[in-house]
Image (cartoon, rainbow over all chains, first blue to last red; front, top):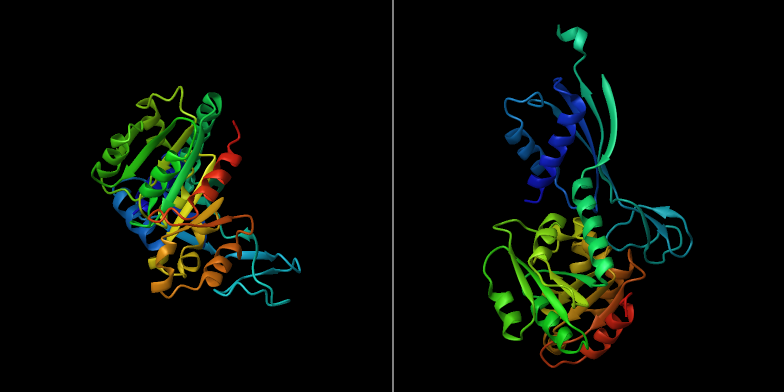
Length: 115
Length: 214
């Protein structure tokens, strides 16, 4: 349920940036190690944006799979639960992707089209 | 019209965490965030650790409800502040900021933050601590690092508690360790039992040696 707090943060930032314009899309980038669940963010978002310029906006979730740089051969790979490097068969690596959790962009309705 | 933002969603939390860290640094309080599932032994380990430290330690207790853990600390005259999150699954930096106002911290050298019993949510929230510790216990099984990589990949050390139960439980120690080091090769791993006290001294000596203000 920690998605409630983070969804409030998303709404706050998007509201500031959009300056009262109707928001069409919000692009969130979420790494698989970050422990945030798309459906839960979506649920709170709909609940919290009723009767606001954000109501009905589509959240585009861009999931980032974990990517490691092999400790041994330094090649990059997306691990499965064995963490075996597919190139040299040794275990594990430094995390280079998978912790992302940010708002990448939003799309707002153009003012001239609205009026 | 598309607007690029690229803003970390946890920015607000992280800014307060930075303030907390400055506060701890100014007062030279070594602050340790302890995370585990419910029942792994956070409270027991904090107590056993404090008994072996030679300087004053305080505790911030995080729980969804109750003051059972903080009463335990108070029995031993350990300065303690209880945070009840009322259902929230993790502590965050603003909660710690409030808690330290209630703690008389001037002579304290070690501050232990006992996070909510949960292996998922606490991993995402920086509190301003100097060190993150995960506790796992033998009855939980050797698969925990594989199931909760977000947490185990982020900690400075992992403590395996209740090792006195190893003879009675199927637990593959190598599998457990590999699951940690696969994405966190620098993590220290300590095996101990708060019941038999085996291994606790080794952990405490290491913790003392990591204190940046000693």
